[in-house]
Image 1 (cartoon, rainbow, N blue to C red):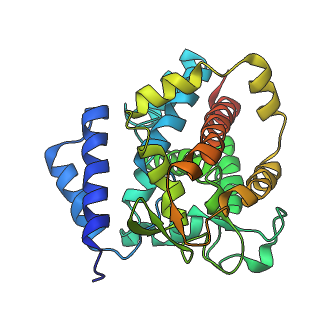
Image 2: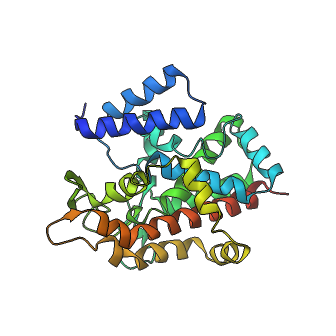
Length: 283
C-alpha cells in the first residue's frame, strides 16, 4: 500500500466534498469509499482535478441538443455528463479496470502521435479513437456501454489537459518540482487543479463564465480540428506551460500570464465533447 502525502490526501478529500455538494448524487458510503481509494494508491495525477472535468461536462451539456443529453444520461443510468467526468479517476485502483491505467495520457515529442513511444497497455489518444468507434458500432451490453461512455467523457477532458499530452522525459511535468504559493508540488499538479482552484469558484460558476465566451464561430473553429490536432494544440502552448521562474516559485505572475490557456483548453474540451457525443448519439 502506497503512502499518500497528507497535503494530497486533504486536497483530494476537499475536492470530493465539493463534488458531493455540487452534484448531490453521491451517497455517504460512496463518498467514504472514494476517500479510501485515494489513500490506498500511489497515483497523484488526475487530469484537471474534479472541478475541471465537471466544467468540461457542463459546457458539453450546454452545447448539445436536449434530446441527445437525455439519451446519453439514460445510458449513464440517470447520472449527468458532468457528473461522470471523474469516474475514470475514481476507479484507477480497481483491478477490474487496471487495463485502463495508462489511458489518461499520451506522450508526444513534437505534437505528432508516435505509437512507438507509448505505453504497451495503450494511451489516451488511441483509447479515445477505439472507444469512439466501439460506441458508434454498438452491440454492447448496458454495463459495457455505460463504462465505455464514461471513459470517453473522461478521456476527452484528459486530452485537453496539456500536461496529459506530455513530452518524453519528465512524466508529463510530474518530475518538474515547483513551489506553488510555498506549497511543494510539481507543475503537472499545478495545471491539474491548483490554477483552477485559485479562482475560488464552483464548477458551475466557472462553466457559466466560460459559456459566455462561446459563439457559433468558436464552436465551428474547434470542431474543424481533428483529434490529431488536439495533440498539436497542447504542444503549441508548452512554452507557456514550462515558463517557470528559475527559483521554481510559482505565484500570481504565472497565473496572470498563463491561466487563459487553462480556460481555452476547458472551452475546447467542452465543445468537442459535445460534438463527439452528438456524432455517436445524436439524431
